[in-house]
Amino acid sequence: MKGYKGVLFDFNGTMYFDKEINDIAWLAIINELSQEKVDDLNVFSKGMATYQNTSFAKGILQKLCLPCDPDTIRDVWTRKEEIYIHLAKERKMFSLVPGLADYLDHLKTAGIPVNIASLAPKMNFDYYFEYLGLGEWFDMDKIVYDDCISYSDKVSMYLKSAKNISLEMKDCLVFEDSDTGVQDAKKAGCRNAIQIYRKDHKPILDEIVIDRINDYTELKDR
Image (cartoon, rainbow, N blue to C red; front, side):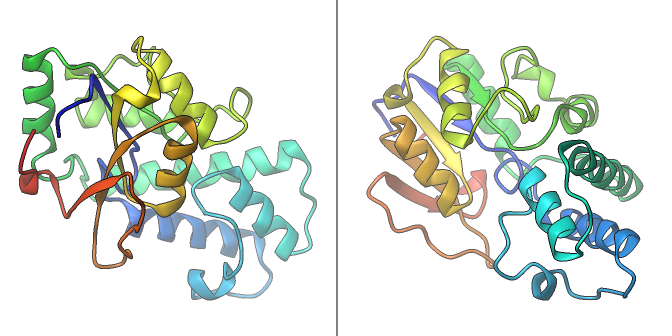
């Protein structure tokens, strides 16, 4: 993995395995809004946008034939994140993906700058910095999170994340877990990416994906 000057990370599903509580939180929100009980998130959300951000909140409101003005969308999204953080604390989910802390220590010792570009909101990162110790490696003022204002898509988020550590995307190695995330990084100029690959994922078939790992203990060449 030579030829890069910095490392950028997606967060959810890449640095922190939280799909289960994300699903539970979204399902809880749907059932708060729906007049009929919904048991299966996948069935309800079939054909909808990724459920990591406000697009999914809008999709829920539209599917339930409820008002979906910007304020309502933001309220639904914020409520979901409150449930998510409550679940994370309740389940004591205070660990990064295996091997990641050691890898971040290695990058820090080597003087390689790192940053995050994530669709998660600031309130989540307040939790992550407090309970996962992200401040050991990352600057809260430099990471890029979804504030519903500054970024039109993940492409712009990756560009800003690289800029915040004084690099261009072509010089950054990216860790992602989703095909859309890899494609956005590629559009931003990334040339090398590694997929965090789990049993519920499909392998990403793109020339910029140079490796697929289950966690960071499997990194062969740092």
